[in-house]
Length: 287
Image 1: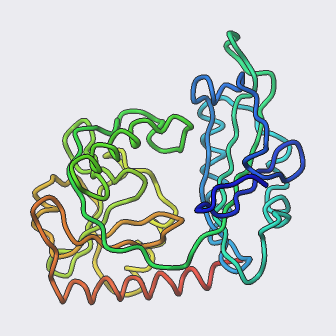
Image 2 (image 1 turned 90 degrees about the vertical axis):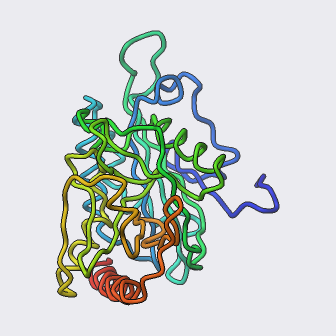
Image 3 (image 1 turned 135 degrees about the vertical axis):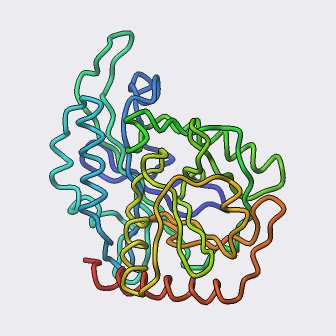
């Protein structure tokens, strides 16, 4: 298996078997390679269990329907495919990415048949350090139906992430075309002010994240009021604490947005309360 000394084991499922991701062959004529014509989902297993896998698959199905891509037959047995990964074990954690493309087709407008690939890599349980955030010039298009799914064209987020790193920040916060806060490059955005948890509404182009939904459930269980709405950058700058969520990292706190540093001790306690409630939901609902 070819890999760099610094990289973890990465496997790829194609053509009904698992291979080293460094050896798997995908046609250069695949329409995802040519045009980003496909959808994907990323999630993780925790000690052999998945959290809300059905919700991830439902969003994948919505994406296929929206793009008019036929569902590949292998998708019906996806759980079995995931659990046969060489690195899958009850005492380990993996990150999976399931990608479905329209298939091979160039210059034809339609692929020959939908194709599914699965990537898997080992993941560390270590908590990511608090992130520094900056406001990006890149915008989310809240008017596009594509904002509600994960397509293989991820350039908007990639560009925003490059912009953030160039400016010396860890991640970028994107607004929608209307100027309201939407999300970070690959995470949903939350912040706390005066004991209230706020997050951009889905009408602002924020992805309906699986962990986002779980955080809303956790906050309700913890008795913390939540506001979903149209917010501007000044609202985030005035917050006492902020954090990001996605299905791989879970929750990652932010220590800074632009020149604002988050140091509210009471709000940090509330974040820990939300995290504890979230971890309980993940434990209860994982299977």
